Length: 296
Image (tube, rainbow, N blue to C red):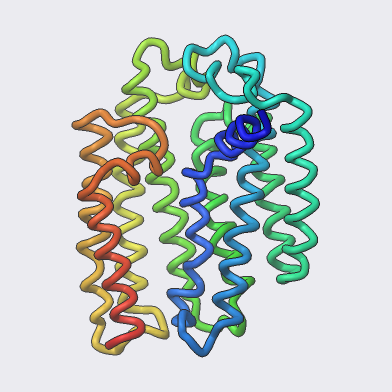
């Protein structure tokens, strides 16, 4: 019984979604501080990643508790642990309290600024869940802001950050908008006539509108990253970082192909964990960045 409850809690925590918290490592990598002689910064970032995973899981539990009655009427969401009764409601509330008691004191111990950003992340999520998720356009903008908060939180954990380019904040913003709009398009296309009932905000979107928005954010994502590769202070003077741009372009085009041609739906992390070409592209992208920063 205890094991079943623990597994139900873990499922409610959505561990697959923890991949989003990888944005906390942006400062460590792009500020060229991922070095053996910089263990405090590495340890801080790893600890911050773990705390953000707990914090994001807390948000998912809160959302499931708030939506439990609606989920029980949904053909798929009724199988969620809280809606189906696999995870007792008192246990879910207890987990929220324990996680918050653990997260914020440890976050403040790591860095007061990091704790403040963690609190901001929680507040934005609660605001999104209660009202903003029903407002077209604003919903994806707020979701994108959570990625920027993650990057800023990572910056707060790295010691003596002096060269983290502002272009990376813009790149993160547009990349997150691309993923959010792509997800909305996949949902609208996949659910077709039943889309509005499943997610009311989709009533405010059309496929042509979403395609236009995708065109805009794809252009801005590639442009801001390209500007970063030849204007950031801490990059090689020969502009070799520009060689990483094709990986970004292919990765974004591949994601669009899966959404628009193959009609894949759901969250971006589901696409990432399911598509081998996209996984290979992201791996090569990461290897190229690390090689340029730390080998050449």
